[in-house]
Image 1 (tube, rainbow, N blue to C red):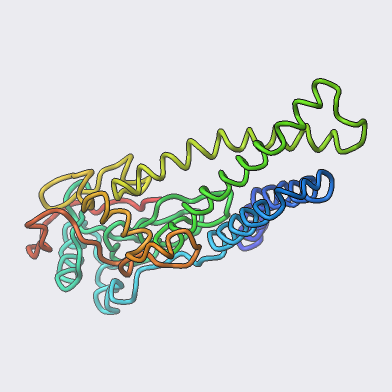
Image 2 (image 1 turned 30 degrees about the horizontal axis):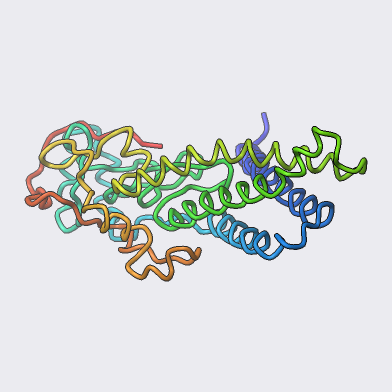
Length: 303
């Protein structure tokens, strides 16, 4: 059997296939629209949407996922005690003592401290372990194979803009190529190799429009509710119990959490999200960190 690190390298290489596929489709669409069709009157708008799409896509791919800071790691002595301890109850006592000075509001479903055995850190609120990236990611939303990256606190705004500009890009192509697509079916289009590009430009743009529109609409709804995809399927648990709206601060403040306070930067793929990814304001009045130690089963690692 091949060494583990060789298999890991192969997996990382294969993970770039969806990104390469998207890049090839985008490059072909640029060639087909600019070189083959060369609809001059539309080229200014086309290049504007193209640049914003590529910029936001690049930022989504290459923004390093944010990880928990060192303060969420167990001290060396406590870590050794935790690893030697066999009883879950005693392990939780160690975690509770270490968590007393940390800004934590969420718990496991059983009410215990959220701890990642893989990364060996106490998980900040909204932080989850991604098995694909093999790390804990702050405010993790999901791992996206189309960007070969984990979407979380560091690049969630870029991901939303990537969806928005890819949708606008596809809509623009579909709308401007439609007239030539109609001429193709009515045999009014000159018989050149550009006919192939007209046919597939419209079909590809329309197909991506439908798929991106549903995903973009869903994430806009999540932003308005101040939820991640994980929290939409599994409500976060606070000391008072699970609450799917626990992080919701109202529509305007929820939008500002992701896009920031200055609206002039909202449409630009530059980081303007509020906070540090470690702590988040909640709507709960009495959501103070619980101090007393409990004897509860620790949670398993989350993806």
